[in-house]
Length: 380
Image (cartoon, rainbow, N blue to C red):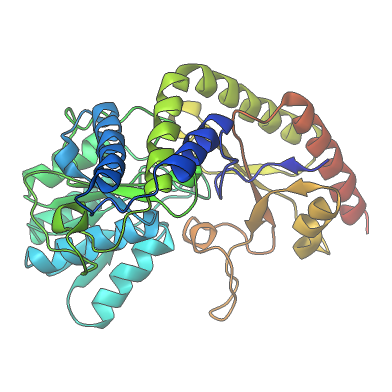
């Protein structure tokens, strides 16, 4: 039996979601762009899914556009938002997902924008004073900041960012891939121009996501082709994926409070056990529960001779997690997030990420194995 603690990378599909998708695969195979009965039946399924997503986020269905996932949604928001609004300055942080960072860096290399990466502290918090100063000097900029960091779990105060962006007439794009379905996003109460989601992070299928575009923001398509997604995203829709996404998000909202309490307890327990039983460990990111994504625990382990073997040894023991270390040189391929927060490159870090399917017994087994491996390495 393997233990899976890499839910920030992807999650197991909920059986109810699978059944919903299978029903569509078996019974609704028409092209949603066809005007005959088979096509209209499938078109209805897509629009029902769109209404479900919109209802949960408290927005209009016309503001939801289905994509192939979070990366495409990020690219669409950034590239079209900047180009179609004549924006010449973008603001982000050095700990963003590469779907955001690499896109912005590419636009800067092309000479289309100037890019400011905000300073972050040792826990991954941005410098809000720097954000406001930069916007004061560069109004009508494009701000792209994620709600929760995918590696260390630090949460962003998106209400505060939204207020500052509105003050300086800036567009605000928020990557919510790690928090969608884990926190309630009421977009009728907080102004965000673009929000992104990937279904496979919330027990839905891979290869599908959505981009929320505030109705006051007008952009052109990123992908041209047919008239799908109200002329905003060419290509025949991934109907099974869209239906699965909506069902996964619906299930997530229905059980959110219960799952949040359960997963937070697992994370707290594992944190406590690691710090108690493995000397020299520390936690990357925010220590306080309210400031940290409850599904992610990033642990920094002591220096050891075979640090790069820690994850490998866990894998051999049947434990799936992810991690790495900070970059120690310009040619070193390490974690850009850990480097940005000043983590010691000689200390390995592992991200454990949880779901509703994990158990306390699994935590105990993982901690026991970690202790065995770490003590053996540190004794060399």
